[in-house]
Each structure stands twice: as structure tokens, then as C-alpha cells.
Length: 186
Image (cartoon, one colour):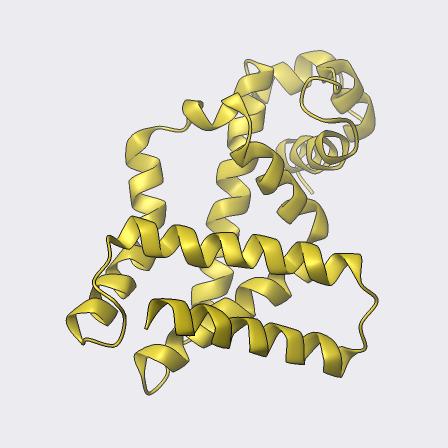
């Protein structure tokens, strides 16, 4: 593993454990097994490190979802597959998911370039536009629809983490929760 990735991995662990402000760069460097100067060679500021970690996770998450939730025969089945894949990814990648939750409610969110945000949302917005055009979902603004779905994923993930469900029950809760969001938007 390269040093940059070691730093990102250490930062992820520590930011989730101690928060952004409770994690000094010296602790990140120590956890990564690199010198402070090495950390600053890759990331000139702590803010830059936080944003780079967020961008890396979001990019990998989107890639994973679109790779593992291929288009299905209908819009509903495509959305269902993406929704279910998102929740299973969150359950398998708890640290990353927690980090993204922290990031989205922090001032660091304003450091993401608007074009980067737009580019990351484009595939989701395009898909929702398609659903509206096909008449299978309600003609609401796509950013509103995305927010409803995304918030649902975050809330259901919290519910799943707070309970010790069997694999079958966990899958049933995920499936049922999709049907609930589908009833709202269709």
C-alpha cells in the first residue's frame, strides 16, 4: 500500500473515532506510520485531507453501486437494485459510511467544488429524470427526489445498525423499506 493510501486509511479510522476537530494531523501521521512531513507532502492542509478522503469514498461508492446494480428490465427494478446495493455497501463499509455522514453535516461540505458535486450526482439525477419522463415516478424536482431516497438510505442504515437482525430479517427490512420509498415517489 502506498503512503498516500496509508494516510487516508488512518484518517478515516481516526476521523470516525474522534471527529474532525478531535483528530490532529500528528495523530494521523502516527497511525499511518509516516512522518508529519510526509503527510503534508501529500495533503498540504488537514482540510485538504478531509476533502480528499470524502471525494475518494464517494467516487468508490458510486462506482460500486453502478457496477453492482446494473440496469434491470424496468426503472423500478433498477432503482430497487441501486437502493439495496447502497444499503449493503453501507453495512459492509461502516467506517466509510459513518465518515460520509459526518462530512455531510460538517462545514467541510462547502469545500467541495460545485462542479465536483454536480458531476457526482449526474448519474443519479439522469436516472431520476428518466423515471419522470417515463411517467413511473412523480414529476418532482430531481434534487428533491434524490434527497428523499438518500435520506431514506441513511435512516434505514441507522435502523439496521441499531438492531441485531438475522440475515433474512435484514434483507426483508431493506426490501420493505424500498417499497415504502417507492410508494412515496411513484
